[in-house]
Image (tube, rainbow, N blue to C red; front, top):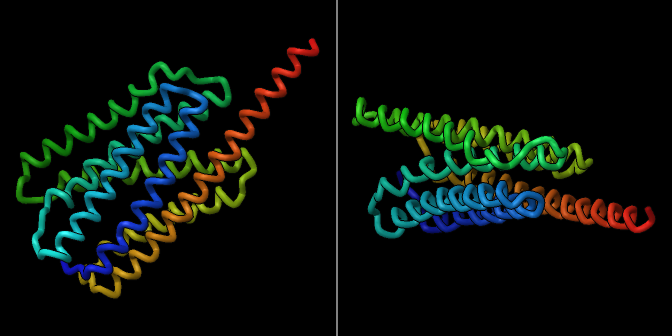
Length: 236
């Protein structure tokens, strides 16, 4: 795989946008439910590490020509569990908003899912060490979890009548799947990679902006609800 220095540096832009977005989502969750917030912050950290590992891998290839495959492989090792944990945290967050779900088991389901896919990846690695079936297993986990996160965020934005945020979350989701298709093109020319990087930057930028709007409006709504409740108690 060939990367120019400028292409490798640009790859850090979507990583930064993504990091801003997931940490804003984690902060939004933590404001309402501390336990779910812990899960969300861990998820945000893992997702950011996954993006950074891939970006650093490209930068090393562009500057030295050395291929540290372990950095490339870490992408889905971090992203799969990260998005799974974030989906679990968002599920409990939405339940907490509705007063229906306890956060006591917020860790349980995500860890069971991560463990099942992790065991599958380990088995695939030992049974077929020359193949990349273990990567495909983690890719499947990442894809499903990312889809769940996107759907949960779109539903939350729509329920709060944040049409722009919902549209941007949808755009991000569509772009991610489009990029997955482009990544399968056999000949990854420099021109094609620039197209991919441009789409990725816009997609993650849209995600970060939508996350900011959703986080801000959720915080305002929570403070307004608390104020109304306090005033009601005063006059009763």
